[in-house]
Amino acid sequence: MTISRSLTRLARQFLAFFSVGIAAAIVHYGLLIGLVERAGLDPVTATLVGYVAGGIVSYILNRRHTYASDRPHREATWRFALVAFVGFLLTWLFMHIFTVTLEGPYLPAQVVTTGIVMLWSFLAHKVWTFA
Image (cartoon, rainbow, N blue to C red; front, side, top):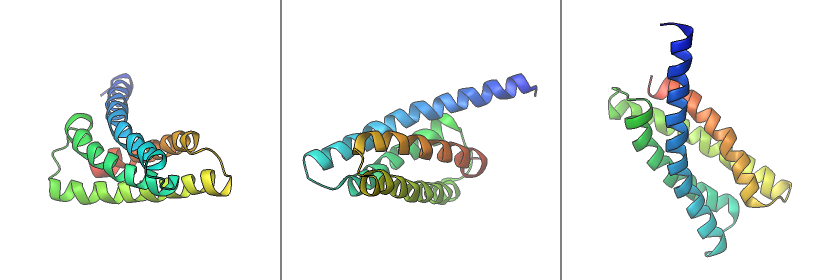
């Protein structure tokens, strides 16, 4: 396979991952905002609830549309969960730093955190979870 075809395939795969990420982010951010603004939860706790719900959406859609994996669910699920757990810890860490330590607003903090965790997740799922 040529480098050009490999890069094109990688770009298409990342675009699919990004599209799935939008669907997962709608769930994640919807819960985050609702739990902070309506239920009075602190942003760090609310974002972790949203992260888990978005993660479920992400697994289902990425397995089918991004990676087209033949890896059995029993194997892919625990791998996905481990990558997601690291993402969960990264989400906690960065949201805590941005909103508690630096006392920044929670939505911009979540946007930056999402970017960091998205890059981690794409690479880890590509080379390990669904490879």
